[in-house]
Length: 466
Image (cartoon, rainbow, N blue to C red; front, side, top):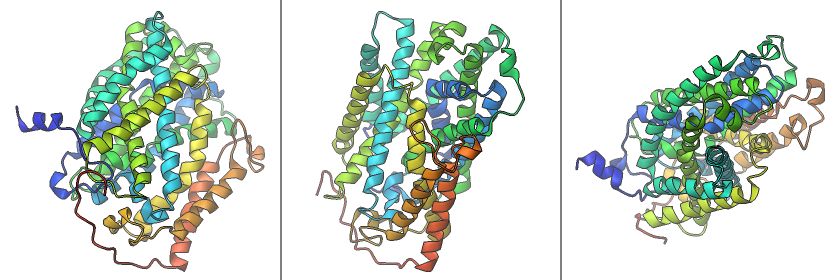
């Protein structure tokens, strides 16, 4: 057995700990295939259909999808460049902006994000297979689909990358075939071919949905780049992740938007079944297996990060796998209980996440690129007595200011802010939140300059908990 195959069979032991230089591996192009495979799936096909359901014609939906994807991918590709440099998961790095204890609310928010996506994805997958084999119920299919996702996650990082490479090829070809079949199915209805400018609010709603679809990866994008060698060029990492996300997401969403425009009265799953047939539904269902693993894998990191406030976790396969299984189980339970309505409320779920994570992204990127210039005392991320303290008031205050100023500009199902009514209901909270949070953090950091502290030397890493 060659060295690469042997390494693939190793169960990953690292989790939120620092990845030593001696264990860094992988190539930058692996990031391209990871995110190409991670976004070429039925979730984005469904999301493309949701954009059309807002009331946009196919061509305007396609523009909104492209604009939103390009903006969101820009942010997450910038976040991802932090992984090789620092060698820790994304949210652990956020302790540099919010403090050891101050970042705890983010770990809880990301955990909610993770099991929420797991549940939504399992429901979409199960609906697809139930359409093919109606004799097996949706709850039963959810349990079946959890098995391969669990196996990939148990082995860890390398298997996640390998599964994404397979997905990128198999599902990528399927997406192309589905689009060709949709084009030959019949012509778009006349209204869907309209090039007349839509209401501003509808267009911005479509853009915002894709911004948060992309940014939802932000809290864990460095989790999948942290094993890269420290000396890789950030520009190459950025380009690989940006292109992988944009190409896959726009392609999958475009197919979903086109099918929704053709068959507006059908769900995305029904449209795929009618236009492409059962074979496509099977592949589409399997397309999300690795994405299920993505979310449970990083959900485990949030649990360990919270546990780290009591004791410092050490490298251990069991210590990574147990919270991984717990996160997956929570997602499965939520899917089983809410499968009748979860996908219906998908856009609402994503819009709430938009409000929460935009200010975090702004503060994190501003600190990394403009304030500290990628210079961090990484061991201090793991102790309240380190360079960043328990609570970093600049980051917390900038986040709170951005979050507070978002609400007048929110336009969602259950709440519409007073300042967006004259914009036709356009939700521009994400834009306001990002600009305000970034500016506030930059001003606070200059008004009260950050002082460099010397962190205590970290204890040697051992298996288990201290």
